[in-house]
Length: 444
Image (cartoon, rainbow, N blue to C red; front, side, top):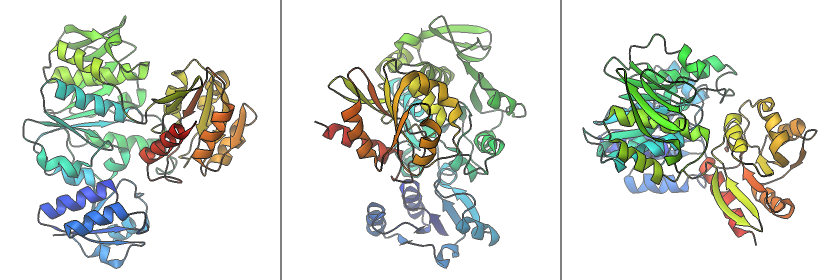
């Protein structure tokens, strides 16, 4: 079969390599420049995979299947034309899932996906159950799927963009952490459309599968009523009859009227209420797989967190520098601002996704000393915040860091927590975070 792949970054490269291994004829098309795609092009040339860059040609449609990368909008001209030509369009996650022999643990939600996926992977492996992590975290699913054996698992960070083009995707466990407004620029400013995209993860599950969901999130509970899947909840606020909950600093698992104390919230190396919720979700999966309590406790103790999520970079002259590049929406910034008691110099901005800054207004008043606005949303950030707190527009992330170095006082925090996507200035949030850390580590 001829397979066209739209997008030549991580998932596109993985899909092309998998297609070739399976005997298909892949063709990769990306509208980005050759200079920007050089690392991907070197892979295609070494693998003998045909490609084009700079624009999409008619050659894209000479195929029986199109695999699209998550960064390609659902209403893009190339995908519209494909649908008009009755060419099936699927996501890379859908494609890879067809060839997965192991159990898929799909982790989705607006916030906390990366940390939860990494903690899931760490906990299973520490407990002697072989697990891979893939999706939005680390490698593309396509890169590792053929390595996964029957009794092994994949902790798969699954975004709404990846779920948009799924139709047979069927995880053994689907885990929904939370759903709050995000990516509304992609979903016609419709929160309902965004919720529907997230809930697609349960579409093909049946009574042999499980969903583990946040019982404190009304958006999830409302949309779970008609699913056949076995349901387990997790909650910070109340005891649940089936699932995981926290009571008086202890973490419990309940099933079939039996309640078991597993560990303490204080066992978690990573701190914060949001991380306790993430850990409860992982705990529920772990107990479903019959992991001993002591191994879960050890895994929680030894997990050090993930890069780009409230990540400590360095301290210089009494100022602490934190990289929270993964905060691509307002809710993530709420978590970050609540994590500090010290005054904050905040770097905010990027590619806006329909943000409503009313949600962080009071927190900014309480915690933030100054805002440095960057990216194409710098003017929007400035217009909203300049009457509330000192706000200054900066041409680059590096300039914001350098200004923060001069202005931040001893005993304060310089925090990159942008509330926006990175695609206006960077390849992805990882690239943005690395640029920030490099700029911080250059300070003298």
